[in-house]
Image (tube, rainbow over all chains, first blue to last red; front, side):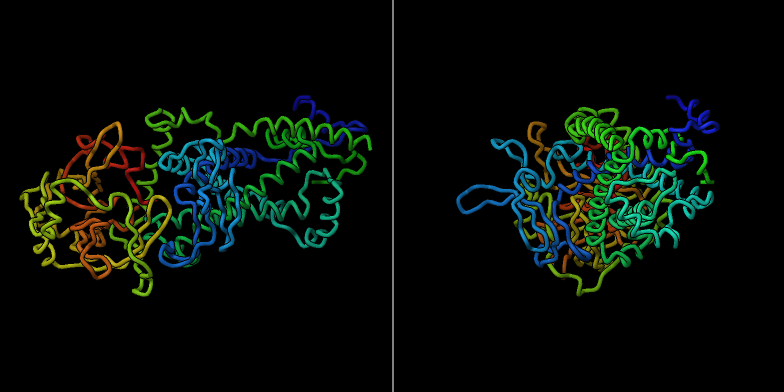
Length: 287
Length: 263
């Protein structure tokens, strides 16, 4: 089915096919794919950077002679000589051999935070990780600024992203529908969707950008207030990591929802902008 | 019901396709493109020039890095990189508690000069409590005392054509098969003349320990730790970084790290 067919069918919907609407503007689609590509590389290079010092702290500095560690992934040797990978969260250690702290082939394991399949490059190379990270960070931030400005001007932000009072009131129904896998394809976002997108675009994205800047000693001179709002460079590094984890969780749910809601229609709409709703002509109302 | 089955079949098909793409992520497929000196890596690395220019435009030349209260010094300064050089000329100096040490300042200057440690200690000093950020990700707060680099540069009278300050160091880094190369670093004249850029001979109210770069190391508080050369032998004013090492401006830079370490 081509786009031309869709545009035609918008004017003359058949009885069993829904109306086709123009759902995603060009700014939304370009920034979506810029983020998708940039975040892929930012994630894998970020885990490479984390592996250079696989420990997170709360505060202004890293405690070597005092305790302020909140997470670490390290290989440790037991009394009998066997080595295992351990992930320690708030002082509690878990054996995570094979994934965190120690991974790779059993006869030739590597002692590293995240395993080779989760980092770019696959081998330990902090400098290349940084090169990749800071290249794609520019695109990520640029896309965010373009998206935010254009969404503010076009009203996309207020209309489609920020939940309205009606959305909040409809949340219980929205949650119940999602749990039953009953999705409405009317082309508009429901309350849960709005909350998810607002959370990612207006909370996580700015947070991950600002905590990233807070780790820069140059930016600390220019904008020392960044250190104040995040409670120090090492806390900022921890928040940056948590934002990453939140984005990975969002990505998994996002992909699951696309697959569950009809991947071809969803993919078409984020590539071409055109989306087929499940509304019939006689119940048509303005979107 | 039939609609659900179709959806589920579609779902499983797409899920299968998506799952088959997962091994692509982060695997070694891209390693070749990212190896040192590959054109792709060099292109990605050019973003550092953009970052450098953006920082120079955004951050005032004399804007200070944050300084901390004495109560924030909660541990010794964590040493990293070279911590105990074994080079013969360094060991000879160390044996005499650096009594015979002289800092040579040369290159593009009107008046090449050298200073003993006592002469440096008798110049106006600056003490600052700052946070040291390692490129690996950790941070450590410590007190540093030393002579502002700008003061030393003024003694030697920098020529107008000079663009960079190069720090030559005593510690030799072993690169395995590629042999051993001396540590060196370089900064632009903006950071060289920054008020917090000091040649430090004191750490946490004591003489600078060997592990932290005795007798003299530089503090460049708006950049990462690897920029702050330890065991400084001499300072050279230059117009280009090409003649040194592999021409990237520093030991770690020659191995692929960014020359501008403010990020």
